Length: 394
Image (tube, rainbow, N blue to C red):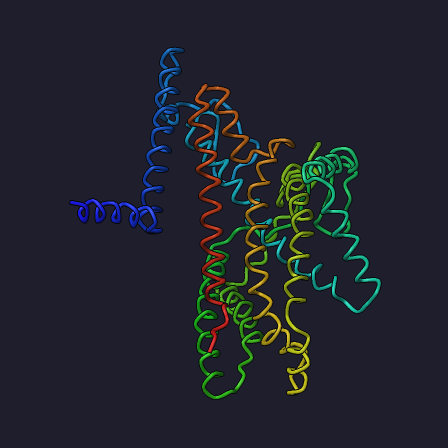
């Protein structure tokens, strides 16, 4: 009897001191607590909504929106449904986020490299830029650029015209664009095909280099493909050259491509602010590579361009990519500040929808879901890229 009791006691002790079993029990308990809390909050919310006779669900998306949206990438009118209005807002957010991320990476990389320049003036100018734009809140920068367009720039009749076909006024930026032709669509397809071809060509060149040691001029060939292939399609399509030139008619310009002051202010504010942080990321990534690596590459007779492309960047990117991803996500999320300067992004359109329908919970849930999807897709792409450029350890 004593041996049996001792064995049972020993089993209890071993269970509580087993890290695997104990952690499993804690996780199950935590999951139950979170589930009960979620159930309480959901049931309490639904009960309060029912008591106040507030309808729930997403049926309002099929109702007429009855409000206009100043900027839209697709056709839209006040007679359209709320679902289409929200889709327009989402496209506007995607547009400013995508263009902003591309410009931020380019500008941030340039400033980051300039920060390491041996030229004293270039180095100090880059440092001043970083300090100024990092220390001013992004919302204040948006207000500044918004005021710049509406208060500082002249009216369309006195618009700034630095070169032919380009005008800046308090109505935005207007510039000449080609008249859309069927050939331009084929050129865009050719450009995409060129990128796909370059992807496989780069893989082949890398395998060839590892096997034979011979370098392939991948950069020059890639530039030639991206320029030459669309140019060839343009020539075969009849070389259309008709341009849509903006002309002042009445109180505004007609024709050309008009970029609104709200979009311009938002894009400038986000890019200049985020690029300051990206510049520091790039600087830190390059400085993380030991100078001995550069000296070893120079001793082999490699040119500066090859040293940067083959030695420094592959090692620096391991440090640059993770924080760079965070800055991309910050830019996309900071685009929600567009409501402060009147740009109709997803948050602005969703806010108008909430005010008209009273579906606050559904509206906020959609805002959270949209930005969550943006963040997850951006993170997934950058993680894939980071995995593909990772150095293979021997």
